Image (tube, rainbow, N blue to C red; front, side, top):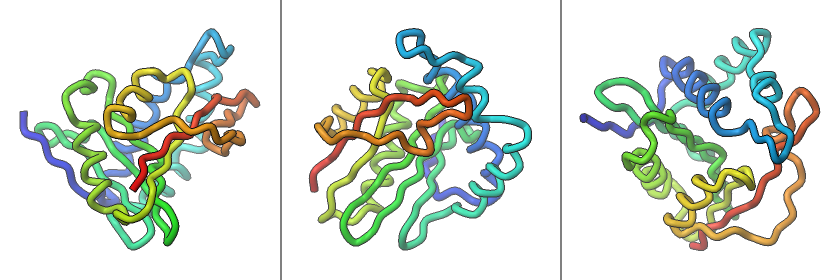
Length: 174
């Protein structure tokens, strides 16, 4: 298994979109919170697909304020991470690995690459679905802690159907 972690390019946008769609559909439906497969799939309408891929294309590579990385296994993109930073904090906006590739160290490799890009003197924040226990455990293993900060429903967590994915904030202190 040949693994490469690298900055994304505009040519990676469709693969990143597909990973996002597949992992969301696998991860976010939840009976306890009455979030259905249809609720989650509504995020990925045909009408929004072109705009979503174009938006991904506009934020590839690593610049001063954002970084987009991909994980390749045997030359196939199987995961990605996207992050922001400013003068006060680092924010991991997303980190997704295809379900069949999870548990192989790819998420840790992407997170390590992001840590190298982040400002080392700033705390790093992220939000995660409160019922996504495997992700919470992954981040805890990587030195993140759940905060007590209340989370306002973000644009990402609010689904087109009106339902909201409940989130918790996590922080890794500098």
